[in-house]
Length: 313
Length: 315
Image 1 (cartoon, rainbow over the protein chains, first blue to last red):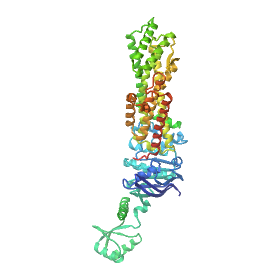
Image 2: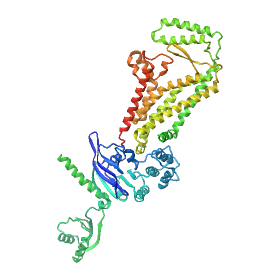
Image 3: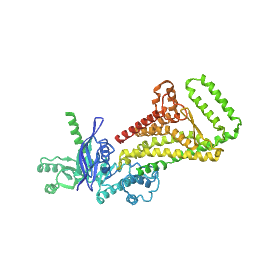
Image 4: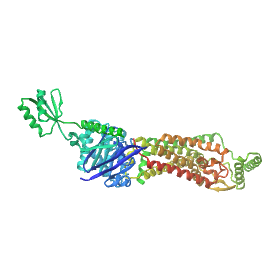
């Protein structure tokens, strides 16, 4: 898989303040890339730089090899986007809105407009005025607008903002389908972690204008080691046994059991030992952590490091 | 480019507000017509037989005045003397029945209204996109910002032209229906450089409209510039309309005291002063005004384009 979007050393300064600090990452064809970060971290700024709404102080962004700085028109014609809420002309019908945007790209046929409409399921209401649309329908119209010119890259800033659960699910399904079937590179930003977990293949975490991590969602959620939760009785005996086998291990004590970091291969061994030692085992399970746990863990740790760095300066 | 203009056109005329503007313009023409018609019915125009003697009397009076009045009023008195003498000499009775031509000429005051509407459109055409948030979707198309802004400006000018054409044609129709054509074909008399010349009525009116529209063009361009620079349509409308109503009076006031007043935009917007009257500040010429107008125009455009192209579209 090749990179369609290349973010190369991108820095943005506003009035001497560094908002984005030498960002570097690539997004490949057919993947959904999540751009995650707390409010004010610089997600929206980065996305706006990708679509040329905000100028880049130094570095460059390339889309299909075209620089957004020097070759704006060629680069942007590969991109479909929704930046924040999809604001439409409310006094026009959905169809007129699409026609309006279609006229701005070269060679979009009427059948393409209709196809985009069908894809997002707005065929019935497309000739109604946009002011009569619900937020979900506007979001879908926004998506149709972004898909008109069959772009290679889809960039969405907070695409699920303000949608109800059904709307969120629908949006997620659309994006996954577009990445898979049309081989598009989809970039979404969000601070909704659970959402990103279900939608994305890879996640980049940004904090205070710096990219602190890029990982596959699965790797990211699970981290390098897994935690095993074991419900045992008596607890003290179990801990003693553990310390005997793994002297270095950190044991978290819970009301009815313990939580220990352990690799999958070590689990049967431990269970066998416990059985032999006459310890009752009620339950052994891998503790699945959510993206949220990991996210807070990562941002806090890196955040602390950053603070420390700033202090030494 | 044609597509872009088509887009802007659609966005202007699909809004009910615009249709109300056109409606108001038509309504105002009808009201003006009715009022004039009503007044006419109350006063009947007398066709004096000895109009030449009357005119001669006026000329004599004016000539006496010439020696007494202040220097400022001299040119306008000279003008009326010249016109009167021409009418006597060529047997042109000034007391004609009020005709459609007179109405179109009187109705040209409504150009201000057309100008007002154009200013509103010009002020909104960029700023509204920011208000609506649609600017974001507009700027992520394979079209440079310069071309986008140009298409918006051209649309504004087309809108102004449309309003003028509507006004002109509707005035003609209303004038024809209410007042009819003149009994005898009367040429328009113009006074340039101390000489009187004849001109056909329709060409006079077209030129007259054009002259009166200069203010409108400049103010719309200014509103457009403010709109693009400050992204604020109320500010653009406010400043432009304020200047539209007070600009020439203020300039006139300044012109009586200071010589530099001739560099103010509004000292130059009324080009008809060179054809049908006297310049606001002594020593101003048609070419000077033209040069000033062009400089102001370029300044507005450069400001609008430079700021719009460089702007970061955030939040």
